[in-house]
Image (cartoon, rainbow, N blue to C red):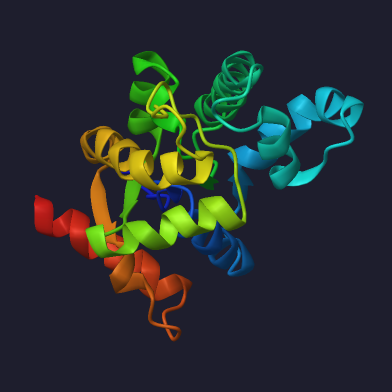
Length: 222
């Protein structure tokens, strides 16, 4: 009678949520503790590099400047280009996981991952444990201020609706909560568990404690 050996399951986490909720912070913490990690932002930026360089842009903030303000003439076209590259990048990551069942990975997704289409999202859910980092209503203003002061790429998908004569910054402050609310339901439906951002603000919280919180949430939901 042969004795079976059981390999430990690979750690596969995908962090989802709005820009500024801590996805990159926790991905880097987990990477520093030895877990392989990929940033979707980095992959998208690499794919857009020739277009960014042509305009003198670089880095993730350069991607935001290349996309422009949501009411700019080129925004819709560049929003579509960004999403197309995000879809290609996510497909590439998932194909790697499908071809390497033993591979562990922490994936720092973008806030717009929910727009990549049902096929990709179902593949993502099948191959990774999806954790939604959820900001409270009180924390929404912080996210708005971060977007205004340190813009990252945001796909508005028609949610930016300026009133006549309204300054763009005021439009952002008015419309961003609606964007968060519109996305929340999609994040919650996609995720295997939700962690409130407020619960992650303890400076003493390390990577192991973060993983234990996830495990506890998932086991509690069973």
